[in-house]
Length: 177
Length: 158
Image 1 (cartoon, one colour):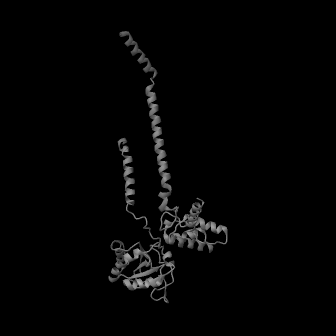
Image 2 (tube, chains in turn orange, yellow):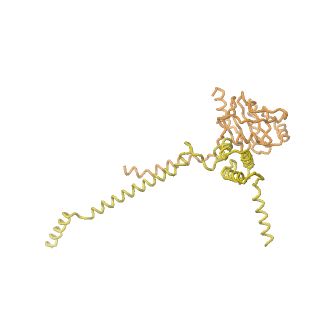
Image 3 (cartoon, rainbow over the protein chains, first blue to last red):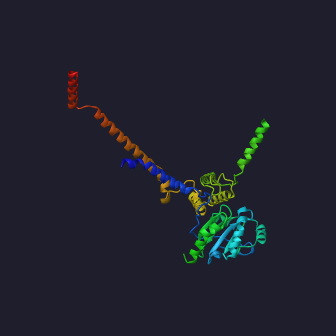
């Protein structure tokens, strides 16, 4: 018994080591969204390509939507863009939120690079972004047909995030989960 | 020299100005609340700054929200809840006390109590051992008598 007690510090050190090891490689800038599991916040904003048409959260319901918050001033958005185009070609329904941006520049961007979006919500002042808890573009939200946020991707959407996180969730939503 | 000092002071004043927003409140109490709230809320983008001192655009948006809510008569708790519901509990420098954060809040006290217990047990054991050793060192009356006899015999034979 006494001899076993001598190993107690070793055991404690191993436990502490395991806990700390778990934290290695975690990206501290990746915060969980407070919004996951909740309804998309209310908004009333025009569309980029039809500025006279106003849309709200009901527009996002009825379909599984990938809501991509982007801006022309954001270099990572440019990096991510070809992948969005690829997903759109595969038939993924992507809605854009043009965040704190100049609509003219945004339209030009889409003309030059192609359009992966079903439509783009124009959020000049960043109010929708703020309500979504966006603290830096790009961010992408997966929204189920009931309008509930299921996942949030901070930073560029890439094939890894798509395969490991988003695709499995879309499949689950498709099965009514 | 004087010129250099004045130049230096100018630079300093400019950088200090950088993150001060022109928010006006009708009472000093509201301004104090604004300053307090922006002090205790953390910027989600630049993770080691509160929103009052941060130059990030999102921190400016958050300050605007805090100012607007205070002007509209919201309580401190309502302002905090509004920001937590958007950006998560990360924005609180001081985590809330709830089941999930019990370990965080009470963990140090638990570890401290365990430490005190260990020290106490070791101290008690040390004292008991010292006591026993002490008693072993002293001889009983019988033993002393026997020792005297042995020594006597020894001195007689030699």
